[in-house]
Length: 271
Length: 271
Image (cartoon, rainbow over all chains, first blue to last red; front, side, top):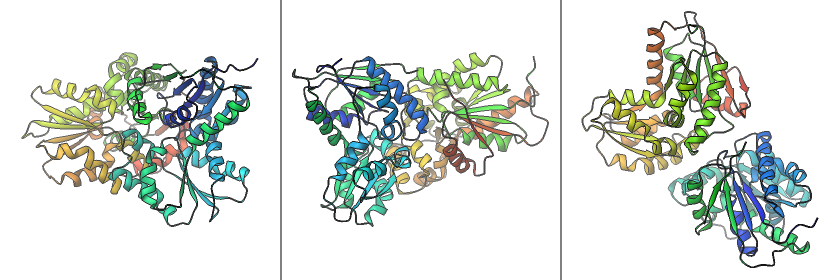
């Protein structure tokens, strides 16, 4: 059976952060229908064990498969780091792309002087070493150093990405990076693009590349859909949001992430 | 059937914060056996809907009842605010005490000049108005104003309770309180006692009472057990910890909360 061109792309995250991926997909592939699932009852994943994250991720994969998606985008670094293979195996021939691979691919392509890349992410993502593994597979010569920044997610959800608290937090987390000559910083969590401006200001270094997986995964998705003749030929895509809890809070935060109103957010009970 | 004197006291929280209650109970009732449950797979509760919090709380209540506890202490303000009655009804004749009532009781007893109390807590606790209701039942003349401080929980878990980030955060959350003449501030979240020192420094007002429910609930528990002849007559209580995920991280954080080593943390799978 051939996948349907008009079928939606499924995007999911532990909560709200994956909407930075939705934003990039909407801009890169404006025709596509998108289904987003945010596991707001069980967020955050970044402090959970990989077994728990895998179990939750497969439940969400089943939900998206029932919605007959033509592609799944894992818009959560903690999920990508721990559960990519399990999700691909559950999804069968439905293609599964993830933000870790996308970020690593974009990072491996930048011009390097020091051959050193930095990664920041949640505790789970950094502990998994997923970016190091992915980068090494792409180019075994690259060195990587990483740092968990657990407070950035709650800061982003509070909307504090550019105030005294954000600056003091970045100063603590990024101090070691500042003391080092490196080529690029991978934002290894889908919330972190909201700090892009403050991070750039903190380093005050025009040569430093800041790599955000959202644009990269949207480009990879586009290339895949083109190559497999799966682009939606009809104009104007639909966007449906599902969450496991607190739709009102999601809607308010989502409108901050996407910078535009959202029509409807539906609650789905997870097991 | 009479409850057993040697039976443990069950204490639970969404995660680690309730250990401030355990600490107070250990000091006030050193003979008692204590069972602690931290729902680390599903933390935080403070951003979840009251329906979800109630469902999770009843699952934990069932777990504690199976362990034959003689009393349940709800050491989570978000649970107390939304689910106290449901838990008491599930627990039958096992007494259920909670931190909201305990905090309100302690606050209603302080000497008042302005007849105004402040409450800080999670989004869920503040939205519930539980402290206002409890205080009004105790003394209808008291006025209350409250503020949600969602970032304090992740800050406490990062161990940042007394650095530049903590001070900048407290300055944003507590600014309105500073501009007001009030008698006492209720720490309406079991993580917040870790900020007591920084909060006191911020207000720099010796007359301001800072009310921490942990000591209050321990005193109420003691009075109840004495009155019902349920105190454990044997010396030296046991302390057993159960969590739903990530026992190692819990153990490290718990040792910071209690200021002493913990023998064993066991994982229990929640539905």
